[in-house]
Length: 296
Image (cartoon, rainbow, N blue to C red; front, side, top):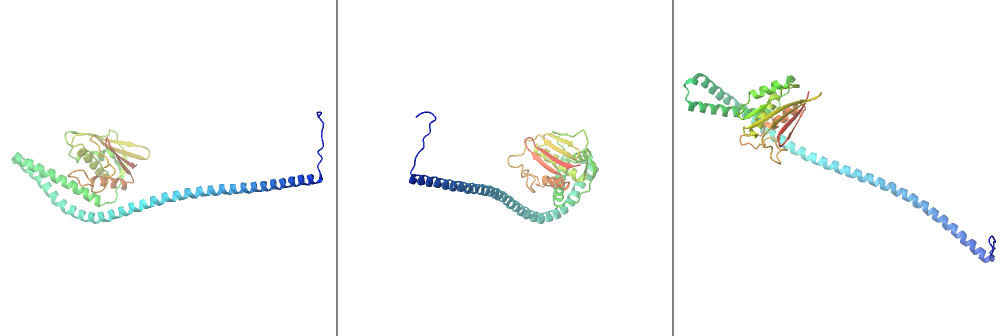
């Protein structure tokens, strides 16, 4: 066969008909497959949309479950707080009456001891002087603890003005018996803050006394003032052993104390006062640092 030559294929009429039928069947099958392909593509698009919708629904379900879990947790906490609130309300009312009734006789005892020491100091034997000092210290401690009870159960309105934090701190320190082995470090630079001076003084008193007791009457207490354009941060740090593991979250709970002579109301009172001032208080351990943030 020479290059470029062509040959005709001779088919019979039946063969031609058979071939045409096959071509027609192939064309029909092609159209069917193309239509099926279009249907499959549409089904795939629909499936992808449904999967996307399912994923969206699944995300919404997960979000709703998270929200429901949070709401249940909040409800449980609210019920617990409500129970505590009702319980403490009754206890608080009774405690306030008892504290008020006890405070007056204690004040009389304390004043009587002071008068006796002033009037009869030269003639009082040393042994009796020691007894009077013991009575004075014990009555002072009881008066302070009763004041803690009254401050906690009676949340009086704030009387705010612009005050010197350093002066408030100095006033608080002047009312504390600081052991000889305790060194207080006071900020040199003053800061002005809009607050209730009497209540903030109670905050300083409680925190410093808490630090002194935590250090077992020996160590350093450092007070810092850090201010920004809109806030004042007060830090009280001590060189004590730190707060035991697991107790950091509990120290602001009413009636919780690790001290044999504590009321468990000092730090809750501090937190209540700071919250009244629309501030926050946090604590870290090792070393123990109480950090208070107040609006200026």
